Image 1: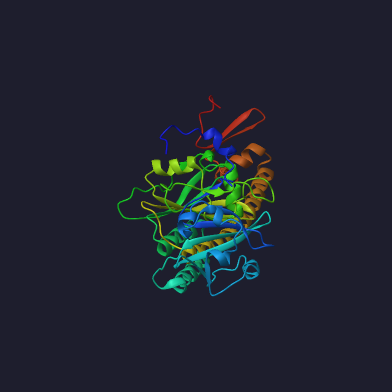
Image 2: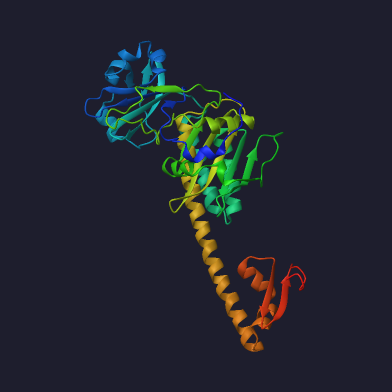
Length: 376
């Protein structure tokens, strides 16, 4: 991969949902739901299956892999979105987990080598449930975010887990962090809006989890490149294996990151933030761990919505109270300037400022931290 300087101006134009390739720790098949035959496949399937690409295309999955227990294309479509699944695919005798989704009229199957974790999926879901109970006890966004970072690191074992919060101007800040001992803290660091381009944020709302298993991977292209139903590249917005922007991969490598995962935090259909996970080496987790992390992300998003709504209500109530007191003082003093300046701390609280200059009928009154009157 090139070490040339990054041109961030192209980030917003990258078609990241149609990269035309996958991360090769798994295999992708795109099937016609009507015939059940493969119409597109990732090139690395040839090596995994031990047959040329020409002998994979136009085959049914039953001719290529062995589902355990046996399942049909119709059953796969019925089970779309149902997680976890106990169906595994044997690829040359090696057990693979699989996920499925529809994309522009095609059934997309993604196979990954099965990963065995201690306690299995039941253990991961127990941890997720415990985390959700802790989330519900949080009374502030800071407390919740710290709990989220702890829980995700406990479940997945990443070296660093951050809750990254977007601000109104599009920039982001590391709002909470859990990290391996000996690592420098990034807590409180701010990043420009260009750090996560607009189209990436939109994709995070559609697909709540993105994994880069190994930043040093070599992309495996989709063959053929065109979806036969659309004539364009396969839309991989919902794909687990979707290849990612080389600009982002280089960005991670420059930071010494070996693997990365991001889990969306969404409030009212808008991306509030991300749970950003970094590991110094390639990460092995499997679909059961990812499913538990998605559940944690969904629960955290709901709690963020509740806490934010509560904070908004409290602010409106406090603002009304302050406004009423300011009006009372203005009426009592028969002066706008005097009424506002006598309750200066409340005025600053109302507008979230550290200082103000009240200019009324040519008279200047200063409140809080301000320049002197001549400078005003």
